[in-house]
Each structure stands twice: as C-alpha cells, then as structure tokens.
Length: 188
Image (cartoon, rainbow, N blue to C red; front, side, top):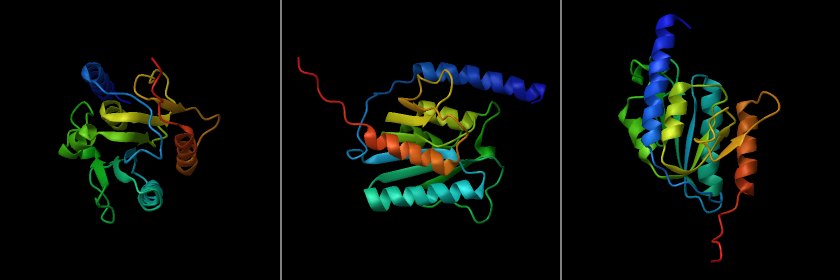
C-alpha cells in the first residue's frame, strides 16, 4: 500500500470512528423465525460470490418468506455488463467511494437507514466500505465473521478455526441464526 493510500486509509478510519461514535442503534436479539427484514452485505467482485448470494437471497425469500435487501461491493470502477442491480440486489462500485474510501451513494444511505431485523455481513476479508456500511446500518441484530476489536459493531461474531468459503460462512450464519431465540421479558 503506497503512502498516499495509507494516508487516505487513516483519514477514512478517523472520520469513520467519529461518525460511528455518534450513531445510535437499538440492539437486541430476534429469532430468525420472527425476523421479517434481512440485510446482507458482501463482496460482489467475483461473479461466483454474486451467484452464491443471489441464490441465498432467493432461498430466504422463497423458503422463509423474508424481505431481503442485499448490497454487494464491487471492487472495480464499472460493473461488468452482465451484473446489474435487480430488485433487492444492489451494487456499490468502487467509483462510489469518496477520497477517503467512504461509500457515498444514495443507495448506501438508504441501506444504512433501513431498520433491518437482522444484518448479515458475509464478507470474509477486510473491506473498509463494507465495514463502514455494517457498522452504521440500523439493524437490531448484526452477525458476521470475527474481527478483532469489532465487538461494538456486531452482536454475534463467528470465529472459524480455518479459512472459510462463502458457502461455509452462509451455512454457519444459518446454523447460528436458527439457534438464537428472542429475548424473553424478565420478571420484575
């Protein structure tokens, strides 16, 4: 990483931390069965990842009757000709990032402000744009892969013993989401 990119990255992280400190979110667990809305963020740079997430979104909609919105980050300036936004499957190309890598596109603001019951972060590698979106999204419950010092962002993190594929990550997310029960009111 060149000096210019390091400076941009530091500035981006500094501004992100200030913005994140101001954000307010109502945390809470919700069972998968009771969840109505699900947000998914992932890296859509590779065609295979896009196809896997598209099939997962279809399964969540068809089999579980969930309202799903997926946002894929594409680490390229222009989307490939065969990849275009479809209903509930949006993309954020690299050209939509500002100078310090903050996603600056109206669809990102819309996604962040959507009150999802569950947000699923399917990215397996570090990505500042996806970290930004995940941290600031207004979701009741956030699940993703373990990242050191990110416990303030997630409500549940999966720490694999070995490197995962996207399909393995989806299987683990599904497994744990189906185990989580709603918080029961405490007797007073």
